[in-house]
Amino acid sequence: MERGLMWLPLLALFIGLAWAGWNEYRKLEAYRVWAEQFAKAKYDIYAVLGQQEDCLTWGKPTRSGPVNLQTFSLKNVQSLRLLVNGAVVEDLESPPNSGKAIALEFLLKDAAPVQVPFTEVPLATKWAKYLQQELQRFL
Image (cartoon, one colour):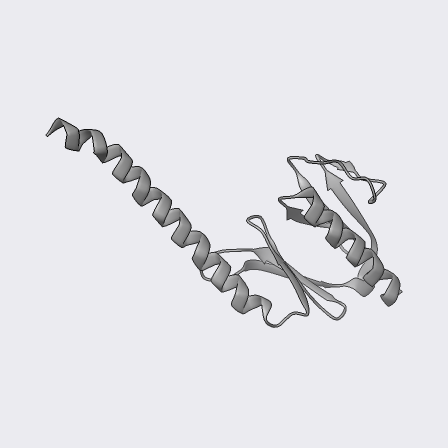
């Protein structure tokens, strides 16, 4: 009996891990369906981002699909900055290796700035470089 009780926490841990994996799988599947409408899209645990021509749409991923979706046009963007730990990264060719708070900040002409969170600096840097080129195209 006592051996069975010793295995009970391990069983609970396994069930918790299985639930977390299933939850993440459902988020990814909902993202996949949502992302089909975009030419370029990204997913991470903090935010989803999709681009179709000059429009960017971003929101928070959930099991039922992205929520709190916001859309804005690249034509309304004054500038784009990469933020790592609240500081602006000046040189996108040599960004910091890591950081806790990573975001792309879009400074809009006629609205409040928009910050799209990222989990990894390299992914945010790739998107920053790509969107800088896109901004040049729409100016």
